[in-house]
Amino acid sequence: MIWLSVDDRPPRGLGSRFFLARDLRMALRAEELPASLFSIYRDLPELITDPAADVVFPIDETHPAFPGDPVGLRRALERDDVCYTGSIADAAALAYDKGRARQAMADAGVVVPLGISLATPADIEPLIASFRQRHDGPMVAKPTHGPGGSYGVTLLPTLDDAMRYLHAPERTWRHPLLIEEFVNGREITVWVLGIGDDLDTSTTFVLDKQGRAILDHDLKERIGGKHQLASECEDLSTTDLSTVQEAARQAHRALGCYSYSRVDAILRDGQAVVLEVNAQPTIPSSGRVMLNAGTGKTLGEVVQTFVEHAHLRHRERRVATAPVMSVPASTAPEVLAAGRDRPDR
Image (cartoon, rainbow, N blue to C red; front, side, top):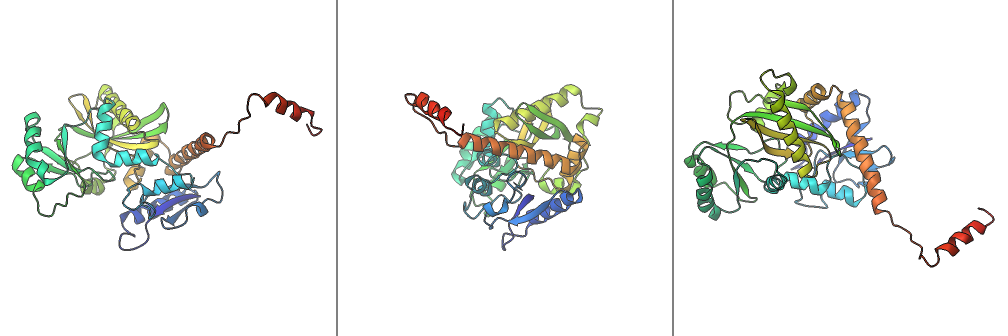
């Protein structure tokens, strides 16, 4: 059974992720894969009746045992030794925190936009002034904490726009805010699939920004799968395609992602600038179109690979954490001899 996690309690529950999970369940069942929804409030170990087949596919990532943790469900699954797909909790949390993810990618040699992190209103004037010495063009604001998908991304064409945005009275400063240079170029998204050195990046799409400067979440949802497979773009050179795909693999590895992730990048003058990594893309209908076109496989075949990767990691984790019984070297020969001399040997 493939268990899809949902929050089914108001006021937070029954939001967009609930309906996304429901649609994904229907799509998997249409391919005769067993899939069901489960509440994040349910006792997790009781989900697993067949350890060799059952797996959790996280959709809603929260969990009541880890309040405030955006990947609390993964932590609960690890605590209870329940098999699940995708990246481990620490890797997913790193990708979720855009500020830490930027630094981790930069440390690994991945090119990211110039940027700063603002934690309080007192940071605005001095840090923006310092940043403007390095970049005096348009800027982009994005929340440091979020699930990806361009949620909350805002273009700030001028310094005045930035100041109005930052000093808005409704700003809570619950989490730091990233201010980055606006990177002008072709926006490309890459699904990184696989484990170890075997990472497939054939599902690479050039995104249609409909003439806009940036592709925010609303536009992504509205145009859905109306993007072009990069390998079919006649004006995208094989060199540029290889460059952005290699950058995606580097970003995936830098954050410790596992089995699958989606990397958004801008191709600027032959250089791939990585914007963000989504360690747990939830595969809406547009994602299914992309995966089918890029891999040539059905959704069920793709998800079945995720499940196999999950079970492989789970088995390896159990072996690694299994207690090791040791026999003192001084007594080992006697123990072995006694064993051989027993009548039932």
